[in-house]
Length: 326
Ligand SMILES: [Zn+2]
Image 1 (cartoon, protein in one colour):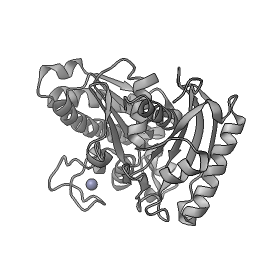
Image 2 (cartoon, protein in one colour; image 1 turned 120 degrees about the vertical axis):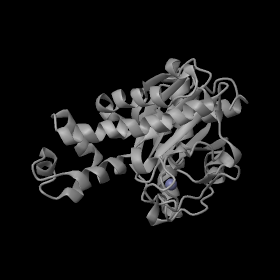
Image 3 (cartoon, helix red, strand yellow; image 1 turned 135 degrees about the vertical axis):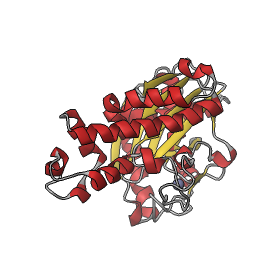
Image 4 (spheres, helix red, strand yellow; image 1 turned 180 degrees about the horizontal axis):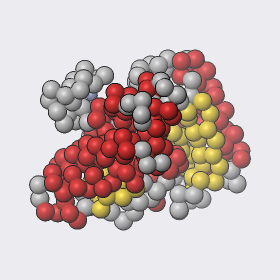
């Protein structure tokens, strides 16, 4: 990073959409932004051509040029090989197997490039300019289709061996529990994710419930978002389902608090939009399940950066790498 390079490009790649943004280093302000469809199934050549064009357009639209940009940070849904800069995610990015995204972006734009797990990137964003500002020990959780996490320990992002730390969605909370797509049983996200809420609702809804009407008599179409909306309208089953989910989320958080002794847990992801109904049971469960008394002092807060957390965090990732503090 040289003098005058006070911006970075942040890229956030998910199974459905990918975004690029130009982010100001001093305050994390997003000065230009664009989202396009990922469509990984169309293959790596097509995907990279569209992503490169998207990054180009975003920088053209920004009030600064490439000269002011220190590098490019990429947050991507894993598994990844962060050491070699490869995407290796056949689950949500089929068609991009072993895609060498870091060398490709570095060659295309002649800038330093960093690849991070997307939850790790979002954690960095929340830590730098979001809910976790000023903390030394922070757990970021994203609870949506799955559950991911990013760990800030001793003020730095903890990535673990090969960047694989924080796959908390697959820590088991019941050894003989619900089978998970990962091949094991009782994984946390089988109880506490959006699909888990939807599955329980589909199983337990009855024709007299407003949720049944919402789903036009087709329970298999019920989603977590519909459960959240029904709870807002006072539907008893929906409220009960979210209460249970808050309990399950709380069990996992208590395990993490007992393991890592954070100052703060930051909760993001679509499921947390129902926080009004989740948080009471979540707090109560943490108080029951914690080991040391310090758990009462852990701040449990909502994420602040919303949809931009990924691009902001990825941009801070490359900026911190270039300052040797990642
Ligand atoms: Zn699992």
